[in-house]
Structures are given as C-alpha cells and as structure tokens.
Image (cartoon, rainbow, N blue to C red; front, side, top):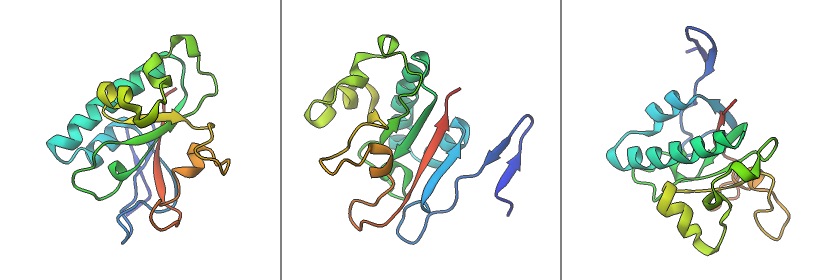
Length: 156
C-alpha cells in the first residue's frame, strides 16, 4: 500500500499500523481530523473522547493555534482509553482568545478532563524536572522508555 492517498485537493499521509507494542511507530504522524476520527473512533467511548477533543481543538483554533499533537492510550490499540493526552504548539497562539480551562494545569487537570474529556499542554512547556518539553515527552513510552509515535493535526 502506498504511504499516501490522493484526495480531491490534497495529499493525506495515512496513520500507520500499530507496532507489536500497541503503539504507533516512532515519530509524528500528520493527519487530518476525518482520518483520525475514523481510525480512533472505534467505539462509543472513543467517540465521546473525540467529541471533547474536537471541542478543545476548536478552542485552540479560535486562538490561532497552528498544530495539536495527540498522544496517550487514545492513539494506541487500547480498546477503552481513560482519556486522551496531547499538546499544542504555542507559536502564534493569542492567549487572550484561549479558553482559560486550557491553561489550568492544576493537579489532575480536572477542569480540562471535565470539559474536554482529556488534557492538553503547551508543547514547548517542560513536562518534568528533566527539562524535556511535552512534545518530546509524549514521544516516549512511559512504561518502556522506547520511542513511540503521536498524531499531529495542523489547524491552519
């Protein structure tokens, strides 16, 4: 199978198959919303998470965000992920237009999870005391330390 599909107006890189670990192969796998929704919206629980994610992405888009990266068990072969995790590129974002809930990083990110069914962080923000930023942090399997893939969505 070819690594891309010609659509009516653009090329769409297909999200690759899962590795034996259940994760995507290492790297950022750029996609469009419709492809990601079909690929990962495989049951009613995942569809509920996608609704929350779409709402969060709409808020980010309204604030001029240019890219979002989705991680966690949501982009794995896990049947019932508890939520989704991700990060967003801060470049060009007009913070005054952003939903304040997306800037609430209090322990557990309860407000984000209640409103958006997942949690999103600024991609360039430090994820832990090691100084790794969230974009890099999310591309490592937290259980094995091995590289893994995430899904990137361009919003502009």
